[in-house]
Amino acid sequence: MNVRRRLIPASAVTAVTALALGTLSACSSDSAAAGNTGKFDVVASFYPMAFLAEQIGGDHVNVTSLTQPGQEPHDLEISAKQTAQLEETDAALYLKGLQPNVDEAIDQSGVKTKIDAATLTTLETHGAEDGHGHGDEDHAHGDEGGHEGHSHETDGGKDPHVWLDPVKYAEVAEGVGKAFEKADPDHAADYRKNTDTLVGKLNELDTTLEAGLKDRKTDVFITTHASFGYFAERYGLTEEAINGLDPESEPSAARVKELTETAGADGVTTVFYETLVSDDTAKTVAKDAGLKTDVLDPLEGITDSSRGDDYFEVMESNLKALQTALGSA
Image 1 (cartoon, rainbow, N blue to C red):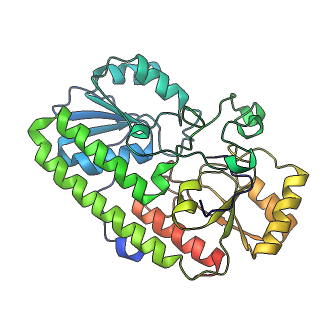
Image 2 (spheres, rainbow, N blue to C red):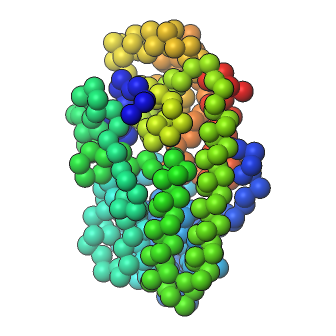
């Protein structure tokens, strides 16, 4: 692996802005109609899964997301209403390891078609080279900030953030399309067509990202949340995560010093934070190191404050932010 990582426990696009394959207007965890709608009903765990279901399913599906817009997905608690929705739906699409409560609810449900995106591509462990694997105790969600203790990983400590690599996301899309074809064969041809269209757009995005990040002054970027491991590996970058898996906990003085030294040595200009959590940690590190802050969105949810209305628009914004930070703009 040609990517240097010290403490990354784990876990644009001009060519794609015209995509607009459709927004997630049908996705609402407030929707009572998770089953028996006359369409192929799909309950999705969170935004990246709901987006796939909506794009691939088109007019034939009714998609309900368990994670509401603006809700941080990792600590999602499943309500009794959502448990009932799982019993009524035709399919559940989720990413095992990201949301433990969702994993348990789907496992215990009687839903006929269970699609685990983690089985549709190859997962990797990021950051293990330095002994800071995904499951290290200091990189799990602890009791700080009201989090219940859990590590945000799949079985075996694998990084679940596959959707941030368009190539891996396309592999997942292929698998989801095939699962839809099998579960709802009457509309198989449309699912195949929609899948091909989506995969084509993801391949275009990959090409655009590669080209857009090619001429850069540094390979290193600093984030609060270690979610860009696959993205960094795909494009030859190095993600330095401030505090591993919990983006809201305070970094140690030693870690801040290390990041300050890294920033100076590698020409880092920016500390990135995300839209669904506080930017306090990023500002603390940036102030101490004399750096700027900006948003790099891990696309775990779309809100009014997101820099784009869907996956492709936000990835375009991510590219622009990285181009500025890495000196390739």
